[in-house]
Length: 272
Image (cartoon, rainbow, N blue to C red; front, top):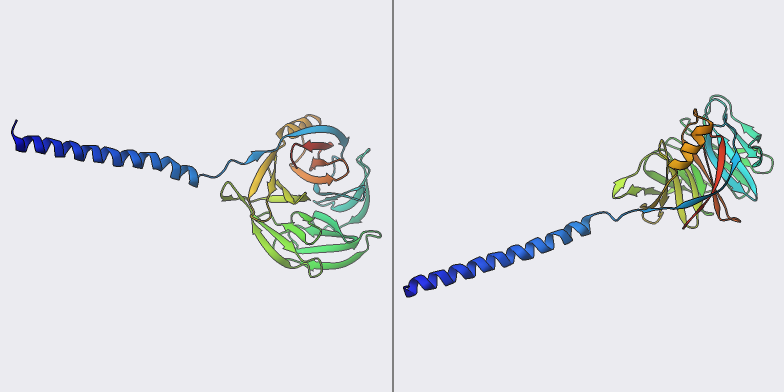
């Protein structure tokens, strides 16, 4: 073999090895980049059913709240009311009945006041908790869906992916949070409940409740209640969507119901 030919072969082999090494490095690094950009898996909340209570199948539930041992419920449609519910019978002592012009939505209780939204009237009401006498009206620029509070601000949903924190005096937004699930906006946020530093939200027309980090707006866990929905449907096939969350601090349990549901379920989460 000539010396020039041998040198050519050696140089060719070195070039081939270099190309293979570069390809190897590229192929090894590519999956790491994809893994870093992929959204983290959202935890699934696990629950156990503690018991069930009767619920008024004529109640188009919009809000559920426990305050000082009493269960409060608000409803919508043409028969919108706020009432104190007897948990053992499911019947409500109606405290406020709205005129037909208003479609009632979520409620929350703070500082001895009951706050209530209406759906498309862009008007909310504040009542004295003891007398249920209306104290004031307030307005907002969106639809009204769900209400809760974090002891400092009123927290409101409007059916979009936005959560608004309202000042308790002016009832105007002081902060807006965009909610995302696996990197994408999560719309149809409905009835709300603030539990142990996190916001829980019914997702309208689904069997799921999202657990939301209010600092980031990210959904950090999902609660799938399909089994409860199916169980309730066996009793009332004409029920409507899951909608209603109330937290009982004393028993560390969550009350769950829906529109026209025959039951209110008491459930315990694995990590609320």
